[in-house]
Length: 89
Image 1: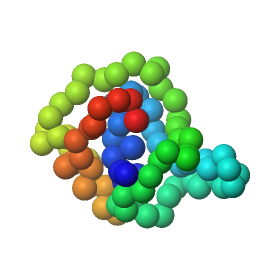
Image 2: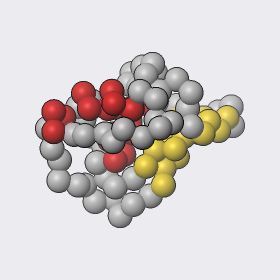
Image 3: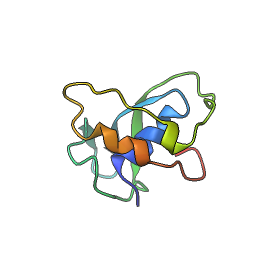
């Protein structure tokens, strides 16, 4: 179980931007997920991304990641402490 921010960071590492998720069984599409900090199971969801080139970026330690202070991002600064797990997402 991981948060939206964790999956977003993993997508970012592959030059993609996570914008939502799709639950195939119910047909629910959730764009701009409201609860981005809560840990949830992503097993039954497909992710919705703006695709990049699919190649991994050069990774940096989480302590080196900087999130710009942009109005409307809310708690985006919490992404600074996210460490990618194993696997693509």
